[in-house]
Image (cartoon, rainbow, N blue to C red; front, top):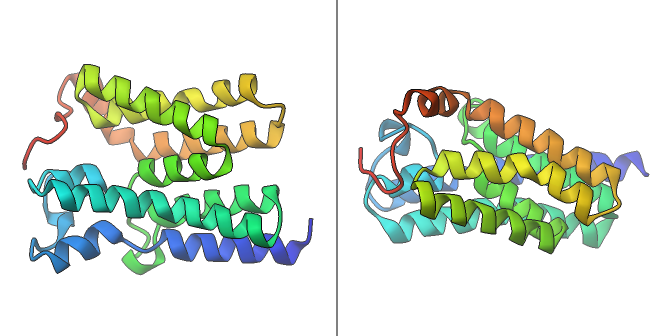
Length: 198
């Protein structure tokens, strides 16, 4: 694999992932700094806590699109391995954005967008698991942790691609790391429900 292709895919993915759409949209809508609301996260779940559902949906779509666009462009320009790296880099950019002093979101939407673009059946399965868990428990973080945590196993059975399985494991580890405070609250029964305003 050409090292230049890997570097370009990584750089573009990271910079694209670093764009804080939730923060930008809330400022444009006159809602102030989303980091001062609810959990302080810049993602769609926290935007939903403002009570603005269309804005939360737009954030979800745009954050998912960061991973998907990075993957599609790398696929069009290089190959599948470069696309996997681009998707992972977009996720890292979302979680540790250079534009916000490396303090970003938790990466769930960007992860799902990456999976949908890399392997549609995997992405749809992960989205289905998230939706089912969210409907049952009404806790976004729990739904995300279950969905993302199962992707390495799902990939192992759906695809004969150790690199893709490894990518899913790496993504799951990063998402769990970013959700460590949520995990503590889950064990204490203190994690807020979906749509609860701050």
